[in-house]
Length: 359
Image 1 (spheres, one colour):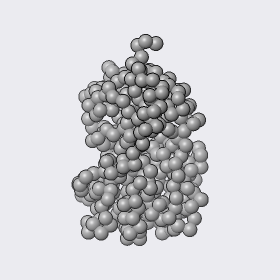
Image 2 (cartoon, helix red, strand yellow):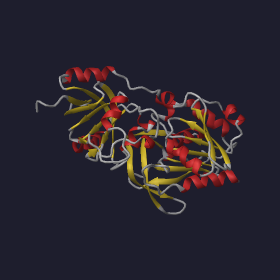
Image 3 (cartoon, one colour):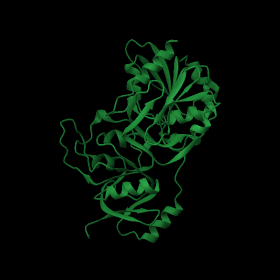
Image 4 (cartoon, helix red, strand yellow):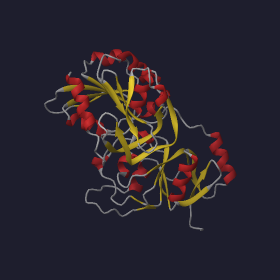
C-alpha cells in the first residue's frame, strides 16, 4: 500500500507497515505489549516504560484524549507507541490535548495501522526484543544493521529518578514516609497521602545515613524501569537499613528488596503488562485481579534461607508476586496496588504498611 509512511523492523527480519503519528523520528527500542483496555495516558506516563516501544493490544487508542490531571509522571520517557487505530478527535469534556499532540510534544514516535494482533502474538511466542521504528524507505538490511549497532541503555533509573528531594504533604499527617524514587508513579504518592502520610521523595542514590537523618516512620521503594541489578546503590541502601525501618516495595522496589536479602532475579520472556493478572494471597487464599508492568521477576528457588518468604503468586505462570520478611515488617509486591485507572483489589497493602509503622 503506497500510503504507508512508517514501518517496524524486528530483529528476526519481519516488518510491519503503518502510518506515523506523534514525533517524526527514528528509534531503536525494546518492544513489549500491554493488554489494558483503558488507561493509555497512565501507561505512557509511567516511568517503568522508559525506552520501551509499547504495543497496545486494545485496538482503539486515544479516544478520550489526554487530561492534565491524570499523568503518572511529568516526563514521558517511553521509546515509542504502536497501536492499531489512533483517534485524533477525542470525546471527553476533560481532555486538553490529543494523544498525538502529547507524543509530538514529548518527542516520542508513534505508528498506527499496524497488525497489532499479529505483533502481540509474535512477542508472546518469541519474547521481547529490539525493534526499529523507521521511515518506510529504510531497507531491511539497513534496519537490521542499525539495530545490531545500537546497545539498549542500562541507566533508566538514573534518568527517571528525582534529581533532588521533594515533599508531598497531607493534612493531619500521622506518619512520615521516605520514598526512594526509582521512577515512581504519582498515584503511589497520592495513596500514601490519602493514608495519612507525609512523603519525602528522595533520589535513588540517596545513602542510608541521609535517609535515617529524616527520622522516617517507614521506607517505601518505588517502581521503575529496567534490570534491578543495574541499581546497586538502592540494594546497598536497603541492606544497610534492614531491620531499622518498616519497608514496602512495589514492582522494581519488590525486586530490589529481594536482591538486598540475597535472592536472585531473572528476565521474563515477555514480561507482565496489563490490568488483568490474577494473583493469589497465600495467607488468605484470596484472588486479586492486578495491574502489572515489569520485565523481571524474583527467582522463587532462591528465596529460602534469605529471611524472606513468598506471600503471593501469579496464577497464570506461578511467578513470585509478593514477599514478606519473617517478622512481617518488610514486604513487597510485584504488581501495582495503586493502579490507576484500576483494578483496585490490592489497596489494602497500604493499610498493611500503616499497621507496620504503628507497631
